[in-house]
Length: 371
Image 1 (cartoon, helix red, strand yellow):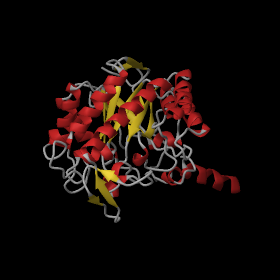
Image 2 (cartoon, helix red, strand yellow):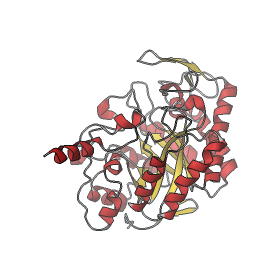
Image 3 (cartoon, helix red, strand yellow):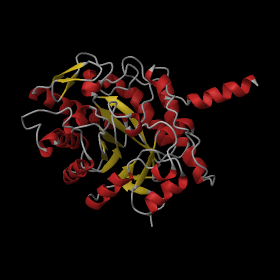
Image 4 (cartoon, one colour):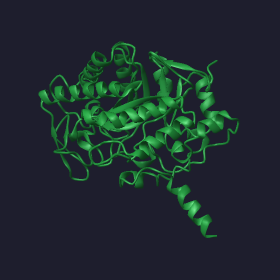
């Protein structure tokens, strides 16, 4: 029976335990996309906290794909030194680390240039998006591969392709965004085509043993969006093309808040695992390791998910913002529930470029200091 604190393999690397820091937007980059010292320090704390695999937040692969002004970039060679520091500090403290490669597409907030996506789209907030020409799709594929090459130069253990939360690649999968009539639209195989091309291009750069993961929605939770059944079908396609591991998430900026990847408030125990049904569907059809994120904050729940074979790795996001040493605390024997209350206040400073931190804990300390 697998255990949380045993070693586990993803492709050619051995992860020291089954805990993953799911990619979480830190808001700790300079305006040019380079690393601030703060993101190096955060990576060090997560590694000291015994997170087995750290996934960096989404690093944009081309300027039009930048989601936020304070987002990490991996689109130029001069960004490699800062990324090298990130990878090195994780390794020095016993963790493995991969970088998440991303393009925000038409849901970008601060792109360098126009909004682009699979099809011409007008979003609910009135923003308009231009559909990509075929040549531009090839350019996006190359940008992902070039980003993966820079990750290898920086010393990362692998890469994760971001296709969740209705970013560019997820937009291609979703009929809500993708209304193309060529080989990139229509059938699910066509809508998934860019994923196969990105994976093949990355494999051509990193080789066959380096972990290449993907993060994908289980469901967009929007009318006319991507579904769980389609998620499983795409996973089987990518497994056959050499994908190493699959992380399930869900929702988008257009989804209802109670169905998003960052649902506010603590969920009742029976709903703690947001994507449980999707994970079971995946496990019935796909063999490569499953990384499961979404609402998990209880040690017993995490332990049971792995012991029962529902997930191979447990990914945490908001709980590690408040407690970067949560995994170590659990490993040391204090298995009380994570102290994160899922208030989502941490998004504010990250999006403002001030750097991610637990606002609730900060406010609590400030209040205690005044008493």
